[in-house]
Image (cartoon, rainbow, N blue to C red):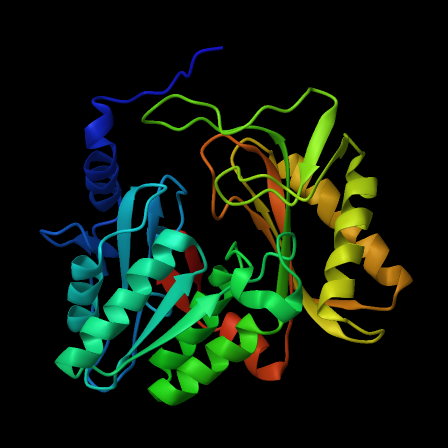
Length: 333
């Protein structure tokens, strides 16, 4: 079946989606001339800035989380492609409020290339920047080789906790330590049942028979760690949560965050059923859910499937996750 999407010219997808986005949420975000997504009301002087970067096509990620208590600036690239270093450097200069800037990068080749170059350029300019990398996909490398693990939806709770910490006056060193502690204590596994299409080329990312699913799928349809027959919601929940618990070495009595991120066409109905399956599996192990999150936070166009994310939470992280924030796609009063 041919791709069907409401588009104009393929080369205009990103500027047009950003234009529409800024028109809908003018009280929360604005665009600079260079298409940086910036919070409308900047932080007070003396607060740490929080910046991220990444390709477009994953809406509402990443720019959906720019706002009070979250990100200060998102630097969107082209569809599924990292932005160039000069725009990220511009974002860092803009986010600087006298206390330094935390740059959060998801571990993908293009994003890392840009992030590393930005850090070199920032050092030459004497900018006060610390980079933290999210790399929590358990499917393509062991925890001992975390530098080769992809960054998936684990960025979201880090944005939220660090954003709240920055608003509260944490120093750059404290914000970076918090982000790194969270990055070291999380794990994500994805599963796909149908492919996405690239909105520019119209090509499918992969092929999958109707009665099969792929566990360990990457953000953009990269090959997973295991293809198998399609399982029920409870069977899928049990399979995935047990692998994640083993990777993170979660023990009986611990408390964890559980986040289910639908990747495009999987419905909330399915995600809630799966979450209930996760709860049943955790109850058997006497592991508590300290916070649950379900929704489409980081999509891959119309890909069918979801990412299951778990993370250790303590009283500080729980407090920061519950702190007020106000962005187009996450508001806490």
